[in-house]
Length: 129
Image 1 (tube, rainbow, N blue to C red):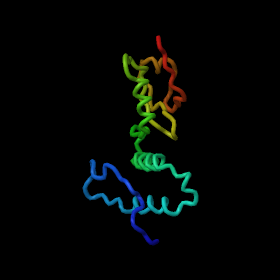
Image 2: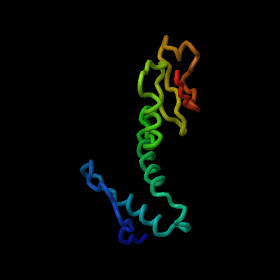
Image 3: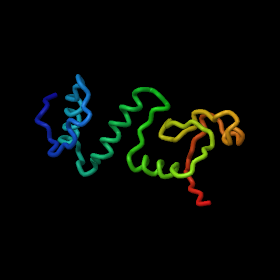
Image 4: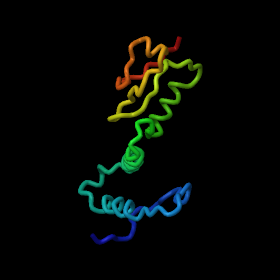
């Protein structure tokens, strides 16, 4: 595979938080090949590609407690849990793209309500009471 010069025109925060001794050459080679050779470039979504790469990196550690939420999802999640928070008593993580109960905390409201490990949270509902 012949690797041409990078096709990215603007790259911001290039050195911010860069770890030592990590070679991203293969990442940029693949990134550039996709941008150069993909049949329908109008369907390439740079943000989706970036978040997919970050999500793949986070998923690769194999820890159900370590998750990546895209900034807009993270912001909404933070808004949902901000303010007065007493909690329902569950540990959560992301599995198969769902927020999932890792474990209910014994004697918590969630535990008493019958919430079990593996239950999926499908919708967040804001209660203005």
